Image 1 (cartoon, helix red, strand yellow):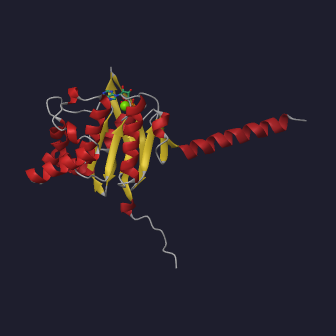
Image 2 (cartoon, rainbow, N blue to C red):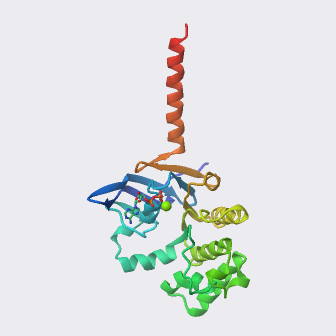
Image 3 (cartoon, rainbow, N blue to C red):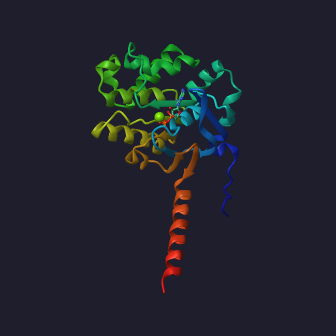
Amino acid sequence: MSTPVSLTPTSFIIRASGLVKAYRSGGGSVTVLNGIDLVVPRGEFLAIMGPSGSGKSTLLNLLGGIDRPDCGTVQVDGVDIGAMSAGQLAAWRASHIGFIFQAYHLVPVLNAFENVELPLLLTPLSRQERKERVHAALASLGLDQRSHHRPSQLSGGQQQRVAIARAVVADPQLIVADEPTGNLDGEARDEVMSLISDLNRSLGKTIIMVTHDTKAGAAASRILHLDKGSLQSEVQLGAAAYKLAAAGELALDRRSP
Ligand code: ADP
Ligand code: MG
């Protein structure tokens, strides 16, 4: 007998609804996100693509609880993150969401070990437990020999690997990545993409990655396009294109004798 597949609320690690975000500019305000609804199943590798300035980082920051929407709600793992105070949210984020940024965002005066340890300082782990976790994360990214190096002593690819170690050290289920290959090229870019794919495939992490690099986007299991403040899926775009093509063909048919 087959078991019916049911999507319980926790099947979705992200449930965002009605997200609106506007920024003041000059005298007026510019609406960047215009009522975004998004659900992300647990274990998905989602890419959000769109032109520069389309609001990709703004959306990712709302989903990751770095910023708050003007309207709408974000639930991560069943928790309404808008209901938390800034302090509660910072502590919750440290153990539930890993962040990877285009420019790495490592603290320049801290070495690799200390950078990776940062999210753990907001958890109840002991000093010894933190040390073990940080060494394991650095080793899993091939950085065991680099723990005393500061960011300026590392290549771009190595810095991004330190940032990936920092993103996974607290073992969060969700990783958000904003243009993670944007400052890299060639081998370093491919290496970072393959590490991020591995987090999804081998460790089952849910990944939400913003990128305008089509090669990076191709690694994802679903691609959404952000344009003019709204999200469109590949499938919808495909269906729309299909309808247009079909309409065009019909028009041609009617013209043919
Ligand atoms: P993307 O990541 O797709 O390039 P962003 O989310 O960074 O886009 O920005 C979307 C739009 O919002 C841009 O027009 C940008 O100038 C504007 N914007 C982003 N952050 C701010 C801010 N803090 N204050 C004012 N405008 C902002
Ligand atoms: Mg951006």
